[in-house]
Image (cartoon, rainbow, N blue to C red; front, side):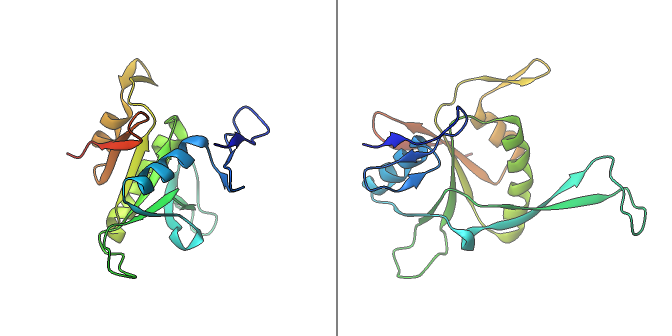
Length: 172
């Protein structure tokens, strides 16, 4: 089945029986679950990387003095699903991100990535390991799916069902 090879508590890397290293056991399970259910799926690589920007608060441009400063960033999803069976066709295909825990930095990142994906006419789906209510700070509690519906309107969330090894999509 595989084993954890991470060297620290936060390092969730997983090695499967073939010797392939995954970011986590959850990512490994989702990949194989999707394949078992007939999806044409592959792991993302550098060709799937998306460039986006984030605003810098309290920053100032040294050239012009403007307080409106952006930082260039890149994002690479975990998986890529091809929905069109035509060889080489990627129209209608989508990126998949697997999330075991939806931390604050991930939430902020996906808000910005969602804006960029919309301008590129690409689709991102996020698969959560659980949809349990979490505290988002300042007394706010929300499920990951409701957060995505509220703040990342063009991202489609899903929740992993470990028993059936399938995804329950929560489209609007």
